[in-house]
Image (cartoon, rainbow, N blue to C red; front, side, top):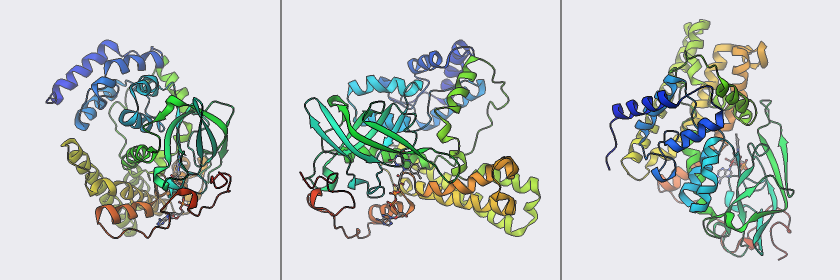
Length: 428
Ligand SMILES: Cc1cc2nc3c(=O)[nH]c(=O)nc-3n(C[C@H](O)[C@H](O)[C@H](O)COP(=O)(O)OP(=O)(O)OC[C@H]3O[C@@H](n4cnc5c(N)ncnc54)[C@H](O)[C@@H]3O)c2cc1C
């Protein structure tokens, strides 16, 4: 079926907002309305709260929301990665249980993939899940788990078969984070935040129905989550729209949204800074007069060229996706490009500020934002797969270069690993 025209979509959504948007509604009541209307997540399938819209129509809808200052569905954190994974691999029961509450913001999620001994080598995970009657019993440790302290559900990758080869012995679960066998401990970061945690499982349980996909096929499900995470990573650098910036945000719903931002969304407040804040670079160079320095001008020009070309590459990838073409090299380049842009932006901000860039808090440049940029950009090169891993992927899958020599074939039980023998299942 062909898509409606942009002008008719704009007219429809603005008409709907005029009849329904009310800043004095409660946040939850409004988001439930939005979910039912299909305007909250227009890119999703029509069967599941969406309208099957392409990216350009979605953008038009978002602009109409911004013009009226209307709040959208909850998007923060990893909730949309969870949703994308459930849309692709979840059963109808999973979608019914989880999707609406993801969009209303009632549930918070975390991604339990990385472990002390398996980050890049994710398929080497040794957290185990053993079927016992009608439930899975989980033991082990995860690390770097963003927002685990706010999450009530976790996406868990765990080993269910120690005799299968590494990638074939993993299964994917949704685990209830609020149970006695789950211990969440925060970790402090160098930028002053504590977004990550280590999570210990001690006979935690997963109900049998919360297996996503098939037993032993968890790797394929995890790849869906990671593909969405990597695709999203190149969106981190996009500019901040001015549409609706002049609207006065007064009303119950804005107050409730502010509370949400200050609490469950707090772990993500530094995420714009980790992308480098390219949006601030030119105005800072102009306002400070540092634009007169040829070195600053040169680095700034390099940054803006890099950032624009990365944006165009991302748009080419989106256009190909819309036309139903298979993902080309653009998709793999996006995340690596975001790392380059973030580092180049940090360099430009430092050139503009000089030693002031090192001052954190209100004494620092841009109220400490510049110091936060410097301390946060390394995260882009690590989260969701490091730059080196992205290069390996590009080398092997895009350029078809020879694969890395592997020493991890055969039953996982026999693969050398740097964890205790009990967790590694060697005493089975
Ligand atoms: C901001 C942020 C948020 C995160 N949130 C989450 C989360 O919510 N949930 C979660 O599960 N994880 C999360 N992570 C963890 C992240 O996925 C891992 O840190 C990442 O995959 C790298 O793993 P590692 O830290 O174990 O590093 P390692 O895998 O130990 O890598 C160390 C170094 O060795 C290099 N290296 C490793 N293998 C190779 C290879 N084969 N070839 C070349 N070089 C290699 C790496 O590039 C890196 O430089 C987060 C990380 C960050 C920074």
